[in-house]
Image (cartoon, rainbow, N blue to C red):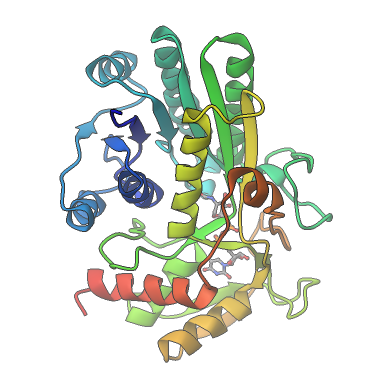
Length: 341
Ligand code: WQD
């Protein structure tokens, strides 16, 4: 039987590169497409080294409809995993139009190209951000989506709706939205990982850059939250575990196992970890001391959120496997490698 081909949009980035590795190892052909607007070829080269093969990398913008059509004409695409999007929450607040245009425009082009070829299986990279501040924890897929607190978050909600409605309206289109909690870590080979541009907004890259000496001090935003140690709680999901959830989603679609045309899954561990617990685990597993201080709360942060991953565990047959220690050791190994230490 010929291999099924999966298109990974945004496949040269952090999550896309890890997903590419897992898809290829699971026996899929993979076409990577990326406009390289938020990454260089580091992860693509890392993927090539891990797999021992240079997969096709098409440099193109998903907002360019003709380019997307050409991509679908050049390759026989059985499934698309759509990552290509802007992701800086703060920037989306100051430049909303940029976010709506790029994140919605690129996804609509994927839908249109899929329609034109008579259908496709589409996995959309969504986020736990769609749940907003909720006091009923953990969150299940049935938990209500709260009004988005940023244009970035709103694009995730709208793209979920676009997918749901397209599945209803257009024959042959099937969709799975994966709602990621907080993806962290790096591949155990330390050949691919997160490469934030400028000052990192996210916790783990800020920690690793502080530990390596690129940043002076980590600010822990808020220690007066109503949580056991006063710092916010999140569900940190290992990047390789997260990548494997995509393989399960693609297999479910291609094997015709979907119960409905559109399905949603939380991709998390189900385990809340506070900022302080994460910092302590990082110090312990990597045997170092991190320079940190407590700082005021960061605007827009929710107190606590973690997943109920039962649906993904039972229906998708996927489960987070790596411990927070393994994940934080991998993140540190990656930081050291890119720093050349
Ligand atoms: C985690 C915790 C901070 C930095 C965001 C997006 C979400 C998503 C993932 C993106 C919080 C604390 C952080 C620091 C800190 N998707 N923190 N000092 O905010 O949960 O989610 O990233 O594509 O949509 O909103 O993740 O890593 O920024 O923060 O104390 O320097 O770490 O307050 O409690 P967040 P994060």
